[in-house]
Figure 1 (cartoon, rainbow, N blue to C red):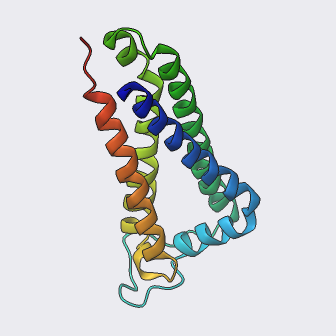
Figure 2 (cartoon, helix red, strand yellow; figure 1 turned 60 degrees about the vertical axis):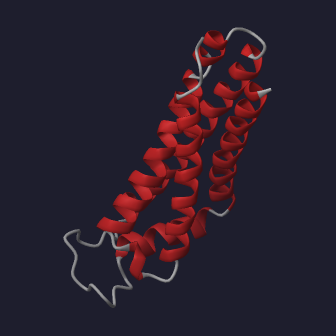
Length: 162
């Protein structure tokens, strides 16, 4: 039974990231505007100077958005593959099920890089996203997604193998 629950958690995490990626594509102009607001540091009332200069080049902004969306798709797809493998290995030995979690673990790793690396470190700390209007909500969402991903990864890493 626990195998079904864990595989289902991985499937929901996959869906979570695929939905984010697809929503970004459906709202591409708005997603670009969000990246532009963060990287451009237009609103910086509290810390007007930054170690990171504003980035306003459309080429670099589109590149950043492309990396974000591609990472969300990569995480979602890796997690989906992992979930399928885990469902298929369910009912077998604990070692076989644990071995089937490899793609899920890779997907979780990508999600942690997205939420704690791209959003909370680069966007929030380096570009001071916390100062702009959309910042606190985006940071809170990134934290929630990162914690969900981290929790699933911990479950996968500590599954019994015997």
